[in-house]
Image 1 (cartoon, rainbow, N blue to C red):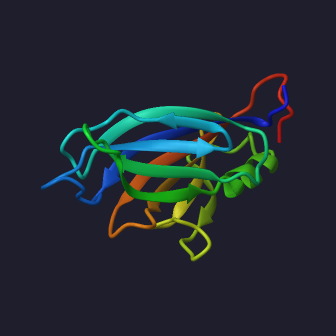
Image 2 (tube, one colour; image 1 turned 90 degrees about the vertical axis):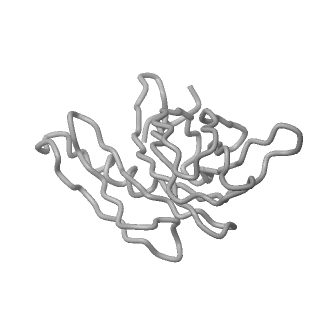
Amino acid sequence: MDFLGLLRIRVRRGINLAVRDTVSSDPYCVLSCGTQKVKTKVVRGNCNPVWNEELTIYIKDLNVPILLSVYDKDTFTGDDSMGNAQIDIKPLVECLRMGLESLPDGTKVDRVQPSRENCLADESCVIWNQGKMTQDMILRLKDVECGEVDVQIEWIHLPGSKGL
């Protein structure tokens, strides 16, 4: 296999997303990385949608950006953009490379602060729990007047892949 592993992205919910229809929106998320694209279901008439969906992409190169884009589903015209954010997996990968499998559940391995270099709306923690390293993020959407998306990322190592 010519990829490093899989990334599971739990798209939990949208927060205060932009209105693109008369009084609300019909949002859905698209995750893209290189030529891959996966998307959530559409939540009708809701600027604070709850998706709670797990999307999985394969990672070939840690330097290829992972983009989360939010759209408003339209029936008769093209879907309207509701913003986008880049997901930075490097802090999670760095923690995985430390080989910390013996940590007690719930251990915060790293904290990432919001900055101009990332799309974080709040502090993001990398946590070791039940044999898995995950990172919770609230992403502030760019190129839009308002909106955030709550996600969790988790690395999945596959036997036969290159690994980290």
